[in-house]
Structures are given as structure tokens and as C-alpha cells.
Length: 257
Ligand code: PGA
Image (cartoon, rainbow, N blue to C red):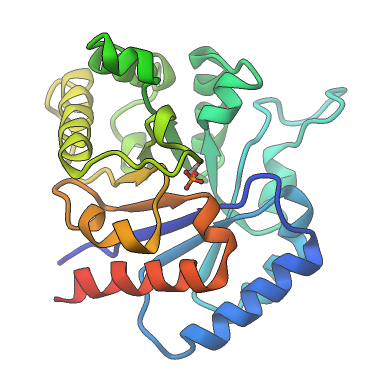
């Protein structure tokens, strides 16, 4: 059986609750009764509660963009996994490049969060990717290895059945310059190999690997047709109804052929 591809929207710090709800109802009108890939929306925290009330009849899942690893306590400004679960969250983006590079999240922080997420039976979308300088100095593999090894420390192979990886080269995020299909193919293969290495060849070969970084309607066809790509994590283009629904259609068509 072919696994359904995944199209995840990372809305970052965009859209009020009202705008979020409006977007979903418009998208639903466009996609009504159509078969679709698995669609995951990761809006700002403030939109989750209302979106959850809305999507119960729709074929859409909710994700969060971050979580704190402690269950509760005096952690001003943070959000707990139970708070997110009570808003219907089923997925959480962990280690996004903006968390790593603007908010100085380390692989160790990422690892604590991955543990919290998996222990609570939520699916983490672990983001990894190299900076331009890493690529230019041939360090892509070393960076991906470090992010996977340290990020997944202590995660046993049984838990690896419930994880999604997003390969997002930092230089492609929000720049309008996507990674070329050959680069994506090579990195996704590298990631699969590293995972097998870390788990002594003992993993079922079915961990979905998404590509993210300037995915747009006009590059999504060749990217989704690239070997090893199981879907997308989309920032900018997911904020625009027309662009996002077009990408959904392109991804769906590929897997229906
Ligand atoms: P982008 O963002 O599609 O705007 O490049 C991707 C992401 O940050 O997940």
C-alpha cells in the first residue's frame, strides 16, 4: 500500500484566530469531497483551540510549532504538552531552524522535547538541515548526523515508528531558493542511511521524510517527484489559499498516478 503523502503548513507567527478560521473554511470549500493527502496545519498557539473546534468534521490535523519539555510549572511564556493536547494537537514541530538559530535551541533541547512529545503519544516533526556554510564546506552529512544522533538520543527503535523528519536546508527557508531535486534526493538518502546506522539497520524503512524550504506551486511537482520525498513542510506558500491548495492538488496527483 502506498502511504499517503503529507502536506504540513507551518504558519510561523502569522494569522490571528479569526484569520486562521477563515482560511480553513475557504480551503474546505475548495477541497470539499476531493481526495487529499494528509494535511497538517501548524498555526500559532492562539489559533489552535478554535481551529480544533472547526476541523472535527474535516479531514485535517492540527500541529503545534513548539512545546516545552516540562509538564507544568513556573516557566513564563512556555506551553506544555497537555495544553496542546487539549486543543487537539496531534503533531508538534521540533527543532525548526528558526528555533535553533533565532532562539538558540540546541540539539539537547530538541532531544528533551522529542522525548516529551513521544512519551505523550504525539508525533514529532523533527526538523534538521544544514546552513549554507556547512554545505559549502562539505559538512552537510556531519551536521545532519549530529542533529539526528543528538536529537534522537535515548529514543528506542519502537518509538521511531511514530516520528516524521523534515529536511529543511537553512539556506532554502524563506529565501525563495529551494534545494534542487538532486540535492534533496541526496540529502534524503543520507538521512535514511544515518537513521539506519544509528539503529543498527534495525528500523522499518518507513519513516516519512518531508522536504521544506521555499516550496511553491511551481517547484512542487518536481520536488514531490524526487526520490525519497514523502511530502512537504511549507511556510510562506501555506499562508496563501491559492498557492497552498495548488500544492495540495499537485501532491495528491502524484500519488494517485
Ligand atoms: P518556507 O518555510 O516554505 O517559507 O521556506 C519552510 C519552513 O520554515 O518550514
